[in-house]
Length: 245
Image (tube, rainbow, N blue to C red; front, top):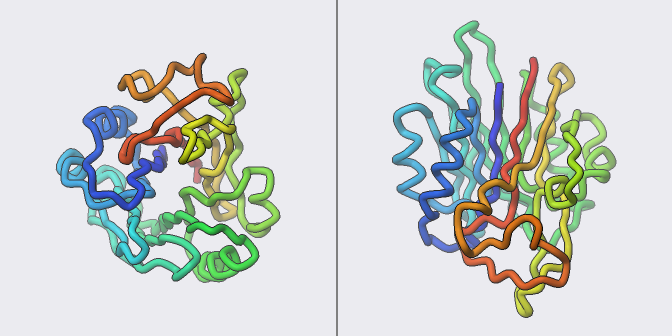
């Protein structure tokens, strides 16, 4: 299965995304889509409706999660398991589907909330995942550096990240100071957890910054540079993942 995860950076605003966002989503032709830092977007849903089933989480703290499953791998639609977030911990959405071979599979989307305190926020997620009795993936913006994921989620596989020679392409997010608009650094906060029977290989893709003049070119995204990112313009890479069962 092929997965796309993207933090589309709506910042609790209902501003619709630009066409390049949903065009980039569709061109990947993935089996599973997970959008975090999302708020109800009619353009995205309209573009997905022919080829995907989709569900949205409840927006208690301002943001939602959308998960879409291709109708090719889920011929009998998808089931909503839970759409309510863990209060003060994370936005949350759990769906499941049954494939054409009658195998069940769960997809969980999360976005850890700020202020981040992994000692408080990760235990309820670990407990929830331990109760899923079928193959699953848990995807999203964990706000946890990649090298710490095994510490906070020791029972689950994390993605194997394809390496790149360019610093930004090894990172899922660009840090920008909200007052000075200065780029302070790069980080890898978007991840995939999975059950033991899965092989998970991921890469971050920044090609979308070529689509709009608001973004500097990759060669110009440097610490100390200026970048005024507007709501609904992603500041995270698309995470593209191959999942082998």
